[in-house]
Image 1: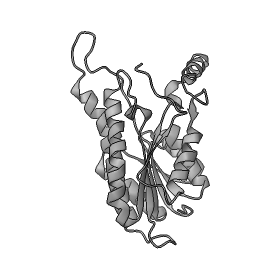
Image 2: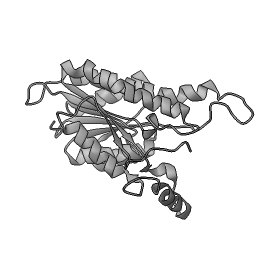
Image 3: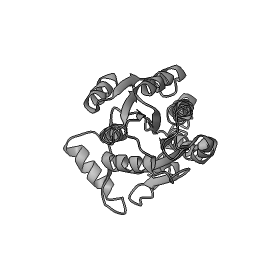
Image 4: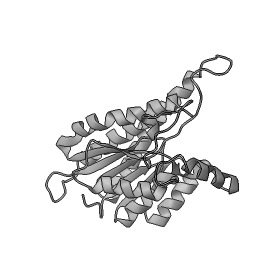
Length: 256
């Protein structure tokens, strides 16, 4: 799928995986809408790549629709990358045997799963209205971001694993729903990726190096650029559809 001149939306595009993917899509000729809640960082990334920034909560219908409309004004919407997400570690019951607040579970599900679905349905509606590409059928591609935690959830990751497992679970039926419109759907499930969540400085670097030793090969954390490379390949490869790809150096996460 040729994305040159097309528009793309990248959620969580102001940092980490989303930022790297936004930059690579722009280098490949796409006009990128950076969707994020971090206005300062989002505007900076958008300006640097010649795109646009829209501040939005991924689970808010009106705000995401505004991003879809902004993208559609820049060119035919062909790409959505759902990379916005979060995790809050907590065991289902605490040391005092009190249960995790239900609101904490609901919040993670809302952002990671409901948000991904919300963005996908709104973007897909716009993609379906575009003229097909040269092959006469292709109109766009959606890429969701899950996690190795969807398969190997660790202690304290019940909300996060449930949300990412949901993303994996909706990939194939969503691809089947959208096949008639020439829209493909895939998911990448990254493992340990070096993003700003680990912090900076000597202690952070030492922790990341130690963490990387648990990866089968290569013995290091993955990079945001490696995720972006995989993302663009999946988005542009016309025969890649309905699949979840683990991008994790063959790691299988231990309980903790």
